[in-house]
Image (cartoon, rainbow, N blue to C red; front, side, top):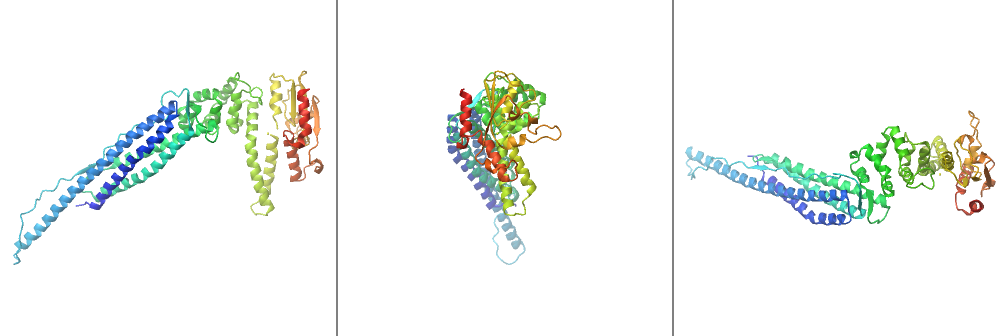
Amino acid sequence: MNSDTGVADRLIGACRDAARALQDQRGGRESVSTAACAEFRGVFADCFRGNVAAERAACSELVHMLDDVARQVQKAKSAAEVEQRRLSELTAWVLAAGWASAGSGVAVDVEPRPSTEETDRPSVNADTARQGLRAWASGSTAGASSADPATLDSAVSTFRIQDDTARGVADGVGAAASEFERECSWAHSDLDAVGSGLRRFLEDNQQDATRLSDIASMFRAAGGSGHVGQVTVSNDVLVLATVPASLSNAALLSHLSTATPADTKALATLTGWQQTLQRMDPSTIGAWWSGMNTGAGTAADVAGASQLQELLLAAAPAMFGALDGMPALARIRANQLNAPSLLRAAEKDLETALKLSGTGQARHDPNRTEMLQNAVAYLKQVHSWGLTNVTSSEVAGARYDKVISLAGAGMLPDWEPQPTTEYSNLYYYDVLIHGQGVTNPFTNRGVVWDGNNPIHRDEFDQNYYRGPDDDELDGAINSIEEGNILMDNHSLIASNSEDDTRALEDMLGIETR
Protein backbone atom coordinates (compact mmCIF):
# COMPACT_ATOMS: atom_id res chain seq x y z
CA MET A 1 0.00 0.00 0.00
CA ASN A 2 1.18 3.55 -0.81
CA SER A 3 1.29 5.31 2.53
CA ASP A 4 4.27 7.05 4.14
CA THR A 5 3.95 7.89 7.82
CA GLY A 6 6.70 10.51 7.66
CA VAL A 7 4.99 12.29 4.77
CA ALA A 8 1.68 12.34 6.68
CA ASP A 9 3.46 13.77 9.74
CA ARG A 10 4.99 16.53 7.62
CA LEU A 11 1.58 17.60 6.32
CA ILE A 12 0.10 17.54 9.82
CA GLY A 13 2.97 19.67 11.10
CA ALA A 14 2.77 22.12 8.18
CA CYS A 15 -0.97 22.64 8.66
CA ARG A 16 -0.61 23.19 12.39
CA ASP A 17 2.34 25.57 11.93
CA ALA A 18 0.36 27.60 9.38
CA ALA A 19 -2.74 27.72 11.59
CA ARG A 20 -0.65 28.84 14.55
CA ALA A 21 1.13 31.51 12.50
CA LEU A 22 -2.16 32.97 11.26
CA GLN A 23 -3.61 32.98 14.77
CA ASP A 24 -0.50 34.65 16.20
CA GLN A 25 -0.78 37.48 13.66
CA ARG A 26 -4.29 38.49 14.69
CA GLY A 27 -3.27 40.69 17.61
CA GLY A 28 -0.66 42.73 15.70
CA ARG A 29 -2.91 43.17 12.69
CA GLU A 30 -5.82 44.24 14.86
CA SER A 31 -3.64 46.77 16.69
CA VAL A 32 -2.26 48.58 13.63
CA SER A 33 -5.66 48.47 11.90
CA THR A 34 -7.29 50.13 14.89
CA ALA A 35 -4.57 52.81 14.95
CA ALA A 36 -4.97 53.46 11.22
CA CYS A 37 -8.75 53.78 11.57
CA ALA A 38 -8.52 56.25 14.44
CA GLU A 39 -8.00 59.23 12.07
CA PHE A 40 -9.20 57.66 8.83
CA ARG A 41 -12.48 59.21 7.65
CA GLY A 42 -14.62 58.87 4.55
CA VAL A 43 -15.74 56.20 2.11
CA PHE A 44 -12.25 54.75 1.75
CA ALA A 45 -11.99 54.43 5.51
CA ASP A 46 -15.25 52.47 5.39
CA CYS A 47 -13.77 50.25 2.67
CA PHE A 48 -10.68 49.68 4.79
CA ARG A 49 -12.73 48.71 7.83
CA GLY A 50 -14.77 46.34 5.70
CA ASN A 51 -11.61 44.75 4.32
CA VAL A 52 -10.15 44.39 7.80
CA ALA A 53 -13.29 42.51 8.85
CA ALA A 54 -13.15 40.38 5.69
CA GLU A 55 -9.51 39.51 6.36
CA ARG A 56 -10.30 38.55 9.95
CA ALA A 57 -13.15 36.27 8.86
CA ALA A 58 -11.06 34.72 6.07
CA CYS A 59 -8.23 34.07 8.50
CA SER A 60 -10.61 32.24 10.85
CA GLU A 61 -11.91 30.15 7.96
CA LEU A 62 -8.39 29.19 6.92
CA VAL A 63 -7.34 28.31 10.47
CA HIS A 64 -10.42 26.06 10.74
CA MET A 65 -9.60 24.47 7.36
CA LEU A 66 -5.98 23.82 8.31
CA ASP A 67 -6.94 22.31 11.66
CA ASP A 68 -9.53 20.12 9.94
CA VAL A 69 -7.03 18.89 7.34
CA ALA A 70 -4.53 18.07 10.09
CA ARG A 71 -7.22 16.01 11.93
CA GLN A 72 -8.19 14.19 8.71
CA VAL A 73 -4.58 13.37 7.90
CA GLN A 74 -4.06 12.12 11.46
CA LYS A 75 -7.07 9.81 11.08
CA ALA A 76 -5.85 8.69 7.66
CA LYS A 77 -2.41 7.99 9.13
CA SER A 78 -3.98 5.89 11.92
CA ALA A 79 -6.14 3.97 9.42
CA ALA A 80 -3.08 3.33 7.26
CA GLU A 81 -1.20 1.99 10.26
CA VAL A 82 -4.11 -0.37 11.06
CA GLU A 83 -4.18 -1.59 7.46
CA GLN A 84 -0.41 -1.98 7.43
CA ARG A 85 -0.54 -4.15 10.57
CA ARG A 86 -3.35 -6.24 9.09
CA LEU A 87 -1.37 -6.83 5.93
CA SER A 88 1.76 -7.67 7.92
CA GLU A 89 -0.14 -10.13 10.09
CA LEU A 90 -1.83 -11.70 7.06
CA THR A 91 1.50 -12.10 5.33
CA ALA A 92 3.00 -13.77 8.40
CA TRP A 93 0.00 -16.11 8.66
CA VAL A 94 0.26 -17.09 5.00
CA LEU A 95 3.93 -17.91 5.42
CA ALA A 96 3.31 -19.92 8.56
CA ALA A 97 0.42 -21.82 6.97
CA GLY A 98 2.62 -22.57 3.98
CA TRP A 99 5.33 -24.06 6.11
CA ALA A 100 2.81 -26.23 7.96
CA SER A 101 1.13 -27.54 4.83
CA ALA A 102 4.47 -28.38 3.26
CA GLY A 103 5.23 -30.88 6.08
CA SER A 104 8.65 -29.49 6.66
CA GLY A 105 8.98 -31.38 9.94
CA VAL A 106 9.29 -28.13 11.79
CA ALA A 107 6.65 -27.43 14.40
CA VAL A 108 4.72 -24.32 13.32
CA ASP A 109 2.09 -22.77 15.56
CA VAL A 110 -0.50 -21.39 13.14
CA GLU A 111 -2.77 -18.72 14.62
CA PRO A 112 -6.30 -18.19 13.35
CA ARG A 113 -6.26 -16.45 10.02
CA PRO A 114 -6.31 -12.65 10.30
CA SER A 115 -9.13 -10.72 8.69
CA THR A 116 -9.03 -10.54 4.93
CA GLU A 117 -11.37 -7.57 4.88
CA GLU A 118 -9.51 -4.43 3.80
CA THR A 119 -9.62 -1.44 6.14
CA ASP A 120 -11.85 1.31 4.81
CA ARG A 121 -9.74 3.72 2.84
CA PRO A 122 -10.19 7.19 4.38
CA SER A 123 -10.73 10.47 2.54
CA VAL A 124 -8.79 13.64 3.18
CA ASN A 125 -10.59 16.62 1.67
CA ALA A 126 -10.49 20.36 2.17
CA ASP A 127 -13.60 22.45 1.68
CA THR A 128 -13.08 25.81 0.00
CA ALA A 129 -12.65 28.47 2.66
CA ARG A 130 -15.22 31.24 2.49
CA GLN A 131 -13.47 34.56 1.88
CA GLY A 132 -15.36 37.81 1.48
CA LEU A 133 -14.68 40.24 -1.35
CA ARG A 134 -12.18 43.00 -0.59
CA ALA A 135 -13.34 46.28 -2.18
CA TRP A 136 -11.63 49.66 -2.40
CA ALA A 137 -14.25 51.71 -4.21
CA SER A 138 -17.83 50.82 -3.56
CA GLY A 139 -20.91 52.99 -3.76
CA SER A 140 -20.69 56.74 -4.20
CA THR A 141 -17.24 58.32 -4.11
CA ALA A 142 -18.54 61.86 -3.72
CA GLY A 143 -16.96 63.96 -1.02
CA ALA A 144 -13.58 63.63 0.62
CA SER A 145 -11.56 61.35 2.87
CA SER A 146 -8.94 62.17 5.47
CA ALA A 147 -6.23 60.24 7.26
CA ASP A 148 -2.85 60.41 8.92
CA PRO A 149 -0.52 58.83 6.34
CA ALA A 150 1.95 57.78 9.03
CA THR A 151 -0.56 55.42 10.66
CA LEU A 152 -1.56 54.01 7.29
CA ASP A 153 2.09 53.38 6.40
CA SER A 154 2.59 51.66 9.76
CA ALA A 155 -0.30 49.33 9.02
CA VAL A 156 1.08 48.59 5.54
CA SER A 157 4.48 47.73 7.01
CA THR A 158 2.97 45.32 9.53
CA PHE A 159 0.72 43.71 6.93
CA ARG A 160 3.64 43.05 4.61
CA ILE A 161 5.86 41.60 7.34
CA GLN A 162 3.05 39.30 8.43
CA ASP A 163 2.27 38.26 4.87
CA ASP A 164 5.91 37.35 4.26
CA THR A 165 5.74 35.03 7.27
CA ALA A 166 2.37 33.63 6.18
CA ARG A 167 3.67 33.09 2.66
CA GLY A 168 6.49 30.95 4.02
CA VAL A 169 4.23 28.63 6.01
CA ALA A 170 1.70 28.57 3.16
CA ASP A 171 4.41 27.36 0.80
CA GLY A 172 5.22 24.67 3.35
CA VAL A 173 1.61 23.50 3.42
CA GLY A 174 1.39 23.45 -0.35
CA ALA A 175 4.56 21.38 -0.72
CA ALA A 176 3.50 18.97 2.04
CA ALA A 177 0.02 18.56 0.54
CA SER A 178 1.46 17.72 -2.89
CA GLU A 179 3.83 15.20 -1.33
CA PHE A 180 0.98 13.61 0.65
CA GLU A 181 -1.17 13.18 -2.45
CA ARG A 182 1.78 11.60 -4.23
CA GLU A 183 3.22 9.39 -1.48
CA CYS A 184 0.06 8.54 0.47
CA SER A 185 -2.32 7.70 -2.35
CA TRP A 186 -3.86 4.80 -0.36
CA ALA A 187 -6.03 7.51 1.20
CA HIS A 188 -8.42 9.32 -1.11
CA SER A 189 -7.38 12.97 -1.05
CA ASP A 190 -8.37 16.24 -2.65
CA LEU A 191 -6.37 19.11 -1.17
CA ASP A 192 -6.53 21.65 -3.99
CA ALA A 193 -8.63 23.96 -1.82
CA VAL A 194 -5.80 24.23 0.71
CA GLY A 195 -3.35 25.80 -1.71
CA SER A 196 -5.92 27.89 -3.57
CA GLY A 197 -7.44 29.17 -0.32
CA LEU A 198 -4.09 30.29 1.06
CA ARG A 199 -3.11 31.85 -2.28
CA ARG A 200 -6.37 33.80 -2.46
CA PHE A 201 -5.92 34.99 1.12
CA LEU A 202 -2.38 36.20 0.50
CA GLU A 203 -3.30 37.83 -2.82
CA ASP A 204 -6.14 39.72 -1.14
CA ASN A 205 -3.80 40.77 1.65
CA GLN A 206 -1.23 41.96 -0.86
CA GLN A 207 -3.87 44.00 -2.67
CA ASP A 208 -4.99 45.55 0.60
CA ALA A 209 -1.42 46.50 1.49
CA THR A 210 -0.78 47.93 -1.98
CA ARG A 211 -4.00 49.94 -2.06
CA LEU A 212 -3.50 51.24 1.47
CA SER A 213 0.07 52.23 0.55
CA ASP A 214 -1.23 54.06 -2.53
CA ILE A 215 -3.76 55.90 -0.40
CA ALA A 216 -1.13 56.81 2.20
CA SER A 217 1.08 58.16 -0.60
CA MET A 218 -1.76 60.37 -1.82
CA PHE A 219 -2.35 61.81 1.64
CA ARG A 220 1.37 62.36 2.11
CA ALA A 221 1.74 64.04 -1.29
CA ALA A 222 -1.23 66.26 -0.54
CA GLY A 223 0.16 67.39 2.78
CA GLY A 224 3.86 67.60 2.10
CA SER A 225 6.80 65.68 3.52
CA GLY A 226 7.60 64.65 7.06
CA HIS A 227 5.05 64.02 9.81
CA VAL A 228 2.03 65.80 8.40
CA GLY A 229 -0.79 64.59 10.64
CA GLN A 230 -4.29 64.33 9.24
CA VAL A 231 -4.74 65.36 5.59
CA THR A 232 -7.90 65.64 3.47
CA VAL A 233 -8.22 64.85 -0.24
CA SER A 234 -11.16 64.28 -2.55
CA ASN A 235 -12.30 60.70 -2.90
CA ASP A 236 -11.85 60.94 -6.67
CA VAL A 237 -8.10 61.34 -6.12
CA LEU A 238 -8.09 58.12 -4.12
CA VAL A 239 -10.08 56.42 -6.87
CA LEU A 240 -7.42 57.51 -9.35
CA ALA A 241 -4.76 56.06 -7.05
CA THR A 242 -6.46 52.71 -6.45
CA VAL A 243 -8.94 51.87 -9.22
CA PRO A 244 -8.46 54.51 -11.96
CA ALA A 245 -10.41 52.53 -14.56
CA SER A 246 -13.61 53.00 -12.56
CA LEU A 247 -13.64 56.78 -13.13
CA SER A 248 -15.31 57.83 -16.38
CA ASN A 249 -13.97 60.60 -18.63
CA ALA A 250 -16.78 62.92 -17.61
CA ALA A 251 -16.22 62.18 -13.93
CA LEU A 252 -12.50 62.85 -14.29
CA LEU A 253 -13.02 66.22 -15.96
CA SER A 254 -15.61 67.12 -13.36
CA HIS A 255 -13.21 66.27 -10.57
CA LEU A 256 -10.33 68.19 -12.10
CA SER A 257 -12.60 71.23 -12.43
CA THR A 258 -13.20 71.25 -8.67
CA ALA A 259 -9.87 69.89 -7.37
CA THR A 260 -8.51 71.39 -4.18
CA PRO A 261 -4.88 72.52 -3.80
CA ALA A 262 -4.26 69.33 -1.80
CA ASP A 263 -5.78 67.29 -4.64
CA THR A 264 -3.47 68.82 -7.23
CA LYS A 265 -0.42 68.05 -5.11
CA ALA A 266 -1.51 64.44 -4.97
CA LEU A 267 -2.32 64.37 -8.69
CA ALA A 268 1.26 65.37 -9.45
CA THR A 269 2.37 61.91 -8.28
CA LEU A 270 -0.07 60.00 -10.53
CA THR A 271 0.06 59.29 -14.25
CA GLY A 272 -3.16 57.40 -14.98
CA TRP A 273 -5.34 60.51 -15.22
CA GLN A 274 -2.84 62.13 -17.59
CA GLN A 275 -3.05 59.15 -19.94
CA THR A 276 -6.84 59.38 -19.83
CA LEU A 277 -6.73 63.05 -20.85
CA GLN A 278 -4.33 62.28 -23.68
CA ARG A 279 -6.83 59.81 -25.12
CA MET A 280 -9.68 62.33 -25.12
CA ASP A 281 -10.86 64.28 -28.14
CA PRO A 282 -9.02 67.64 -28.39
CA SER A 283 -12.32 69.51 -28.70
CA THR A 284 -13.43 68.00 -25.39
CA ILE A 285 -10.20 69.13 -23.76
CA GLY A 286 -10.53 72.64 -25.19
CA ALA A 287 -14.15 73.02 -24.06
CA TRP A 288 -13.33 71.71 -20.60
CA TRP A 289 -10.37 74.04 -20.08
CA SER A 290 -12.14 77.11 -21.44
CA GLY A 291 -15.26 76.40 -19.43
CA MET A 292 -13.45 75.95 -16.14
CA ASN A 293 -14.64 78.42 -13.56
CA THR A 294 -12.22 81.34 -13.22
CA GLY A 295 -14.23 83.11 -10.57
CA ALA A 296 -12.27 81.47 -7.78
CA GLY A 297 -9.42 83.88 -8.31
CA THR A 298 -6.66 84.58 -10.79
CA ALA A 299 -3.15 83.28 -10.31
CA ALA A 300 -0.75 86.14 -9.72
CA ASP A 301 1.76 84.99 -12.33
CA VAL A 302 -0.59 83.82 -15.06
CA ALA A 303 -3.02 86.49 -16.14
CA GLY A 304 -6.34 85.09 -17.28
CA ALA A 305 -5.82 81.68 -15.66
CA SER A 306 -7.59 80.62 -12.50
CA GLN A 307 -5.64 79.51 -9.48
CA LEU A 308 -6.90 75.98 -10.07
CA GLN A 309 -5.75 76.02 -13.68
CA GLU A 310 -2.30 77.14 -12.60
CA LEU A 311 -2.19 74.34 -10.00
CA LEU A 312 -3.23 71.77 -12.60
CA LEU A 313 -0.56 72.99 -15.01
CA ALA A 314 2.02 72.71 -12.24
CA ALA A 315 0.86 69.18 -11.39
CA ALA A 316 1.57 67.84 -14.90
CA PRO A 317 3.43 70.47 -16.94
CA ALA A 318 4.96 68.02 -19.43
CA MET A 319 1.59 66.47 -20.23
CA PHE A 320 -0.36 69.75 -20.48
CA GLY A 321 2.41 71.34 -22.52
CA ALA A 322 1.87 68.75 -25.26
CA LEU A 323 -1.87 68.07 -24.82
CA ASP A 324 -3.94 68.60 -27.96
CA GLY A 325 -6.88 70.88 -27.35
CA MET A 326 -5.19 73.06 -24.74
CA PRO A 327 -5.10 76.81 -25.51
CA ALA A 328 -1.74 78.04 -26.75
CA LEU A 329 -1.06 80.28 -23.75
CA ALA A 330 -1.80 77.45 -21.33
CA ARG A 331 0.62 75.20 -23.19
CA ILE A 332 3.26 77.93 -23.10
CA ARG A 333 2.79 78.27 -19.36
CA ALA A 334 2.97 74.49 -18.87
CA ASN A 335 6.22 74.32 -20.78
CA GLN A 336 7.62 77.14 -18.68
CA LEU A 337 6.76 75.16 -15.56
CA ASN A 338 8.34 72.05 -17.03
CA ALA A 339 11.56 73.79 -18.07
CA PRO A 340 13.28 73.71 -14.62
CA SER A 341 13.19 69.93 -14.34
CA LEU A 342 14.32 69.52 -17.93
CA LEU A 343 17.08 72.06 -17.34
CA ARG A 344 18.35 70.22 -14.25
CA ALA A 345 18.49 66.95 -16.18
CA ALA A 346 20.21 68.56 -19.17
CA GLU A 347 22.75 70.33 -16.93
CA LYS A 348 23.53 67.05 -15.16
CA ASP A 349 24.03 65.26 -18.47
CA LEU A 350 26.18 68.13 -19.75
CA GLU A 351 28.35 68.01 -16.64
CA THR A 352 28.98 64.30 -17.22
CA ALA A 353 29.72 64.86 -20.90
CA LEU A 354 32.22 67.62 -20.13
CA LYS A 355 33.98 65.40 -17.58
CA LEU A 356 34.32 62.65 -20.17
CA SER A 357 35.66 65.20 -22.63
CA GLY A 358 38.20 66.49 -20.13
CA THR A 359 39.56 63.02 -19.35
CA GLY A 360 39.70 61.92 -22.97
CA GLN A 361 37.22 59.09 -22.48
CA ALA A 362 36.49 57.08 -25.62
CA ARG A 363 32.77 57.19 -24.80
CA HIS A 364 32.72 60.96 -25.17
CA ASP A 365 30.57 62.16 -28.06
CA PRO A 366 31.32 65.79 -28.99
CA ASN A 367 28.08 66.05 -30.96
CA ARG A 368 26.08 65.06 -27.89
CA THR A 369 27.98 67.61 -25.80
CA GLU A 370 27.12 70.36 -28.28
CA MET A 371 23.47 69.23 -28.31
CA LEU A 372 23.33 69.39 -24.53
CA GLN A 373 24.90 72.84 -24.49
CA ASN A 374 22.25 74.05 -26.92
CA ALA A 375 19.51 72.40 -24.85
CA VAL A 376 20.69 74.08 -21.67
CA ALA A 377 20.85 77.47 -23.41
CA TYR A 378 17.35 77.02 -24.82
CA LEU A 379 15.83 75.93 -21.53
CA LYS A 380 17.36 78.88 -19.72
CA GLN A 381 15.68 81.13 -22.26
CA VAL A 382 12.30 79.44 -21.75
CA HIS A 383 12.43 80.29 -16.50
CA SER A 384 12.42 84.09 -18.71
CA TRP A 385 9.49 84.29 -21.26
CA GLY A 386 6.96 85.16 -18.61
CA LEU A 387 6.35 88.47 -20.38
CA THR A 388 4.50 86.43 -23.00
CA ASN A 389 1.63 85.82 -20.60
CA VAL A 390 1.47 89.43 -19.45
CA THR A 391 1.37 90.97 -22.91
CA SER A 392 -0.96 88.25 -24.20
CA SER A 393 -3.36 89.04 -21.40
CA GLU A 394 -3.35 92.65 -22.65
CA VAL A 395 -4.40 91.39 -26.06
CA ALA A 396 -7.22 89.56 -24.26
CA GLY A 397 -8.34 92.79 -22.56
CA ALA A 398 -6.39 93.00 -19.29
CA ARG A 399 -5.08 96.42 -18.25
CA TYR A 400 -2.16 97.36 -15.99
CA ASP A 401 -0.71 100.54 -14.57
CA LYS A 402 2.85 99.32 -15.13
CA VAL A 403 4.51 96.42 -16.95
CA ILE A 404 8.14 95.67 -16.08
CA SER A 405 10.08 93.30 -18.32
CA LEU A 406 13.10 91.62 -16.73
CA ALA A 407 15.03 90.70 -19.88
CA GLY A 408 11.68 89.44 -21.16
CA ALA A 409 10.90 88.05 -24.58
CA GLY A 410 7.87 87.29 -26.68
CA MET A 411 4.78 89.31 -27.56
CA LEU A 412 1.94 88.32 -29.87
CA PRO A 413 2.01 90.01 -33.29
CA ASP A 414 -1.22 91.88 -32.55
CA TRP A 415 -0.01 93.26 -29.21
CA GLU A 416 -0.41 97.02 -28.90
CA PRO A 417 0.73 99.20 -25.99
CA GLN A 418 -1.96 100.74 -23.84
CA PRO A 419 -1.82 104.54 -23.52
CA THR A 420 -2.39 104.42 -19.75
CA THR A 421 0.27 101.78 -19.08
CA GLU A 422 3.94 102.52 -18.29
CA TYR A 423 6.33 99.99 -19.87
CA SER A 424 9.92 99.32 -18.74
CA ASN A 425 12.55 96.80 -19.80
CA LEU A 426 15.52 96.04 -17.53
CA TYR A 427 18.32 93.83 -18.85
CA TYR A 428 21.96 92.86 -18.96
CA TYR A 429 23.72 91.69 -22.08
CA ASP A 430 22.74 88.04 -21.82
CA VAL A 431 22.12 84.97 -23.92
CA LEU A 432 18.59 86.06 -24.77
CA ILE A 433 19.68 89.55 -25.88
CA HIS A 434 22.43 87.92 -27.90
CA GLY A 435 19.88 85.66 -29.54
CA GLN A 436 17.55 88.57 -30.28
CA GLY A 437 20.26 90.05 -32.43
CA VAL A 438 20.33 87.01 -34.72
CA THR A 439 18.22 87.24 -37.88
CA ASN A 440 16.20 84.44 -39.41
CA PRO A 441 17.48 84.24 -43.03
CA PHE A 442 14.04 83.21 -44.31
CA THR A 443 11.94 85.91 -42.64
CA ASN A 444 14.63 88.58 -42.12
CA ARG A 445 13.27 88.91 -38.60
CA GLY A 446 14.77 88.05 -35.26
CA VAL A 447 14.87 84.35 -34.37
CA VAL A 448 13.36 85.10 -30.94
CA TRP A 449 9.63 85.69 -31.40
CA ASP A 450 10.29 87.15 -34.83
CA GLY A 451 12.00 90.10 -33.17
CA ASN A 452 8.82 91.19 -31.36
CA ASN A 453 10.51 91.77 -28.00
CA PRO A 454 10.66 94.62 -25.46
CA ILE A 455 14.23 95.53 -26.39
CA HIS A 456 13.05 96.35 -29.91
CA ARG A 457 9.92 98.30 -28.92
CA ASP A 458 10.04 102.05 -28.38
CA GLU A 459 7.14 101.87 -25.95
CA PHE A 460 9.48 100.31 -23.36
CA ASP A 461 11.89 102.50 -21.39
CA GLN A 462 15.21 100.67 -21.76
CA ASN A 463 17.39 100.16 -18.69
CA TYR A 464 20.68 98.46 -19.53
CA TYR A 465 23.20 97.26 -16.92
CA ARG A 466 26.69 95.83 -17.16
CA GLY A 467 27.24 92.44 -15.60
CA PRO A 468 30.16 91.73 -13.23
CA ASP A 469 32.06 89.75 -15.89
CA ASP A 470 31.17 91.72 -19.02
CA ASP A 471 34.80 92.80 -19.50
CA GLU A 472 35.54 89.22 -20.57
CA LEU A 473 33.05 89.39 -23.44
CA ASP A 474 33.91 90.55 -26.95
CA GLY A 475 30.43 90.49 -28.45
CA ALA A 476 30.45 86.85 -29.57
CA ILE A 477 30.17 83.49 -27.85
CA ASN A 478 33.52 81.88 -28.66
CA SER A 479 33.85 79.62 -25.64
CA ILE A 480 31.86 77.80 -23.00
CA GLU A 481 33.09 80.32 -20.44
CA GLU A 482 31.68 83.25 -22.43
CA GLY A 483 28.41 81.37 -22.90
CA ASN A 484 28.22 80.81 -19.15
CA ILE A 485 28.70 84.55 -18.54
CA LEU A 486 25.72 85.30 -20.77
CA MET A 487 23.68 82.67 -18.94
CA ASP A 488 24.64 84.13 -15.56
CA ASN A 489 23.70 87.62 -16.75
CA HIS A 490 20.30 86.36 -17.79
CA SER A 491 19.65 84.91 -14.32
CA LEU A 492 21.13 87.95 -12.58
CA ILE A 493 18.34 90.37 -13.53
CA ALA A 494 15.79 88.35 -11.53
CA SER A 495 18.03 87.70 -8.52
CA ASN A 496 18.69 89.48 -5.23
CA SER A 497 22.45 89.33 -5.74
CA GLU A 498 24.59 92.29 -4.71
CA ASP A 499 25.68 92.46 -8.35
CA ASP A 500 22.06 93.27 -9.21
CA THR A 501 21.72 96.08 -6.67
CA ARG A 502 21.38 98.91 -9.20
CA ALA A 503 18.69 97.10 -11.16
CA LEU A 504 16.81 96.27 -7.94
CA GLU A 505 16.88 99.91 -6.89
CA ASP A 506 15.56 100.95 -10.30
CA MET A 507 12.76 98.39 -10.08
CA LEU A 508 11.75 99.80 -6.72
CA GLY A 509 11.83 103.30 -8.15
CA ILE A 510 9.62 102.31 -11.07
CA GLU A 511 7.15 100.63 -8.74
CA THR A 512 6.87 103.56 -6.33
CA ARG A 513 6.96 106.57 -8.63
